[in-house]
Length: 117
Image (cartoon, helix red, strand yellow):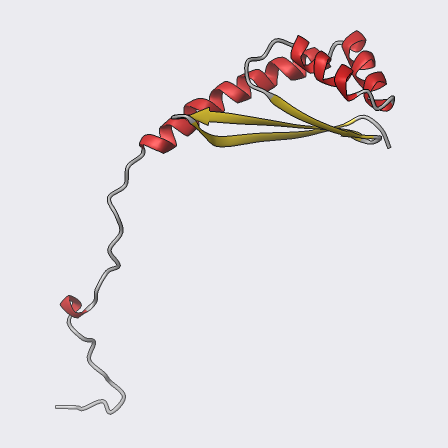
């Protein structure tokens, strides 16, 4: 019989150990998904309001004047239940919406909308 000097037999499969992972529990993940669906719906409401030229002018004017109280008031007037953090610059507005599930922050939706050069 022919003997190949470069052949090394593989060890038996039972010698390989697979890493042990904990059992998967999707509960927190599904709560996060539900919360994110809510904040994405509310983001749609905000974007629809931003699409109204009159509202856009008020928001941009208040931001340009550095009137954070008026910007916050306008954002609250949209009527979404999730708090929205706004930051604005001469080139645009940054919106951050944090979702909560099971009494803790679980997800974040961030949008930047350009309004200048």
